[in-house]
Length: 336
Ligand code: KG4
Ligand code: ZN
Image 1 (cartoon, protein in one colour):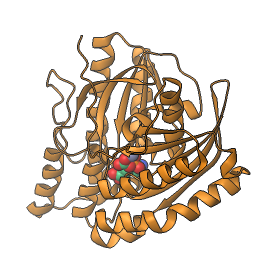
Image 2 (spheres, rainbow, N blue to C red):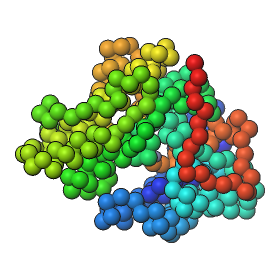
Image 3 (cartoon, rainbow, N blue to C red):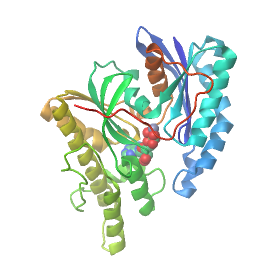
Image 4 (cartoon, protein in one colour):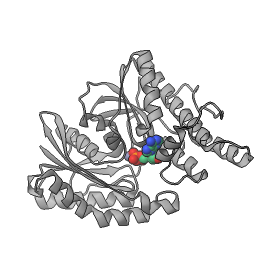
């Protein structure tokens, strides 16, 4: 089965062609047109600019993906498209385009949830037995799920304010480091000492699986305003470590309370080296498996949309032409 997948939920237009043979995924094309440079002068994403740019590039990006995959549109068996959560104006571009293609080709279309797709990206490189714990950490989301099957994600907890990636972006902005913040903070942090600047570990001791990162951002802001001297490298290392330690501690509690031995960490922030290293050390110590998609499948891409689309299609899901978009996911809550 050949899947053409489309992703336009935020500031990246992405198109992928993924082939599935006996349950194994092979990525034949995975293109991402990033709008980062366009939004950089504004220090964050401008929704109106994002949707206009999606519209401009989606057609040619699809043509290029098909060319790289060496197939024609007629050889596509299934279309998958992200229809939420995300920026509504951006989502509408991808969804309308996918609907038009599906209608004109007479091929099935499946809707995909962006957060679920991040979580399932791991299948692009390995297969994994269920159940497992999933931690999705990106610019828009920070959430823990119990994953019982590819189509069943139960929400254990999520951020009450900023997402982890959003905190990276906001801290980078207040340090004048540019946008997006994650890659630049992690690069600077490599030469820093995380123990020189004490920062809080928000919600570390709360009994639930929720997160909060806005207080951490405020602590950085207060330090900057205090006029105290510090090395940016040290602050980046301290901030990155604080975020990573909270994520690891919450995940560990979830694994223990659900008696799970396997987990997946995905989303843009999962590309962070320190976070990966901390998770790997914890996994060795406690004896659980931790899996991360490669960096290119952690940040926004359409190959992950193809994976989720495949599983949804197998479960009998199919979109009609009145398929709508949504800004926020509504996952069923985990009940023990
Ligand atoms: O998954 P993603 O590409 O888009 C969303 O769905 O939000 O994640 C983007 C986020 C941004 O906030 C970016 O700063 C963060 O991921 N990010 C990182 C790193 N690379 C990207 N955060 C920490 N360390 C990184 N190496
Ligand atoms: Zn994402």
